[in-house]
Amino acid sequence: MSYQVLAVLTLCSSIFCANSFAGQVEKQTEKPVELAIIPKPVNQQLGQGRFNLSGKTRLFVNDAAALSNAGLLNDRLEQTLGFRLAVLQRLPGMSDGNYLLLKTESDAPNKVDHKQNQDESYALNINPHSIELKGTAAGQFYGMQTLLQMMPAKTSPVAHLRTVSIADTPRFSWRGMHLDVGRHMVSVEFIKKFLDQMAFYKMNTFHWHLTEDQGWRIEIKAYPKLTEVGAWRKETTLARHVEPYIGDGKPYGGFYTQEQIKEVVAYASARHITVVPEIELPGHAQAALAAYPELACTPGPFEVATNWGIFEDIFCPSEATFHFLENVLTEVMALFPGQYLHIGGDEVPKARWKKSALAQEVMRREGLKNEEELQSWFIRRIEKFINSKGKRLIGWDEILEGGLAPGATVMSWRGEDGGIAAARQGHDVIMSPTSHCYFDAGQGPKEQESWELGGELTIEKVYGYNPVPALLNSEVQHHIKGVQANIWTEYLSKPEMIEYMVYPRLLAMAEVAWTAQQGKDYASFEKRLEAHYPRLQKARLAYRIPRPTGLPAQVHATDKTHTLTLHSPVASSKMYYTVDGTVPDTSSARYIHPLVLAVKPGQDSLVQVLTVSPEGRHSAIQRSVISNTGAVQK
Ligand code: ACM
Image 1 (tube, rainbow, N blue to C red):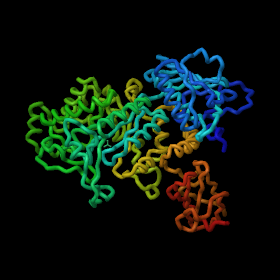
Image 2 (image 1 turned 45 degrees about the vertical axis):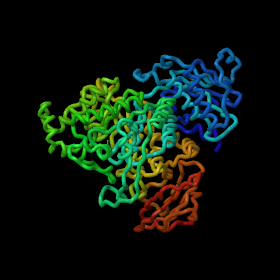
Image 3 (image 1 turned 90 degrees about the vertical axis):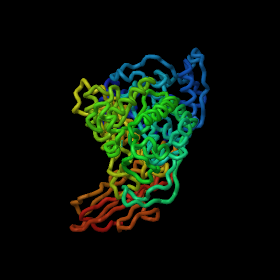
Image 4 (image 1 turned 180 degrees about the vertical axis):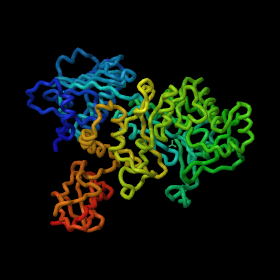
């Protein structure tokens, strides 16, 4: 397959073509095609001809923001094509053609529908003589990602870019990916690689879940024991789903220094990604209590949790706790320049507060009817403090219980109800329901997936998510600020496991977050996705190798023979199969031609397929049961 074919898909759905190319002149020599851009741009008009980008193409910039983007673009060009472009700031030289212009415009160049997000929109025009990319610093950056996605996935001295005019703008202003480093930690290098992919797919918010019962992962200078004690657990449970407890006997831990945090924040910021830190309170705090037991309602001692679940020892609502949290949050806020601070607020058992004389006294003093109201009071107090430092509070949807803090944004995870209730109360909402956004769920049937925490969430289901519930009336829909996928790492102890869960589902979530609902089309996405597997390979990501198309889980054959025509979405991969019940490996029959299976009434047969990607990675074994089927006719 040529590079260009990889980058530009030649098929498109008839609906897409009809809508997008209406108004094009009838007599065309080249058939209109859809560019393999993910997330799909709002508007793209393909032209005739190509722009040939080579090492001779000059890169013009009009200001410092464009210059900074030019540096990032050159880094990526060097990685993908193998060359950099000369950067020039004297625009008059452009009259000779063969240039790429990055032009910062303070206002959005293309005033499309989503007014609230105008500062992230861009206009990209590629004609045979030049490429012009205009937008704010962020918009320009997103236009660069579009441009990079049009480049060949492999090194090449020239990129033949299809001429096109794109006007693009995001649907949502919060396009998030979360990562839990409390249960299992990853390196700063891993996080940078994660941020690179987020940026490439135009995600703009990294929710960094930094504290947990099983580990406190952020250095706090005023409280060194948080990381001396709280960052380390004596072992980790081997059992899945909590019971029975079997420890692995291996100490586990680590944390990010403030210097490392600054490095991540700066790296993200250059890629127009805001890092939102999460410091869990009042629950999921056992690691902090192991370090500072005086902040609990009972004397302790506590240990950093070694198994998973919800723990009853939480912060007691004492003045000592508020003093501690205010000091911690002050250090945290100084490290993260974004407006939001995530305070958790989820899964807070009230058992300790119910029995605590101190907690009951606070309830009496403040006129609080129950422990839910005490939690609400706790969070309101924290919100007041955060607001006094110019920041905004966001929390999981449990913060609705007992009354929402006045300016809080709600992250709706237990379904959409919390988000709907919050929006109706006039609060901003990020949708992240477990049903569509929890990437620790398996990507296929449980028996075929190794590392899931529970449930099944296919890429198609992720793609189908519409974060604006139909139940919400139009006046309050604007409170839905975005959508986010979450990765909890209880069972993801190695970085490649996390990557397996994230890719390619991140690409589907990126399109949910960016592309307007009416522009979405799963068939189109699936085709565009095929062009992205080589990019995931090039980035050395341990993405999940998808099931071949043409291999339904269950087939009810009616004829004497049944034919399976398989296609792997991963180009140049090899498929091996068995029909005798043995597990296929690379010594099994290789799939080349359609499989013709003889069908005998009353017999089922099992077709098992292993896909091996070009870089040698093996898929999970993919199975299909053919009812009434006999042996394969070889
Ligand atoms: C959560 O998944 N406990 C927010």
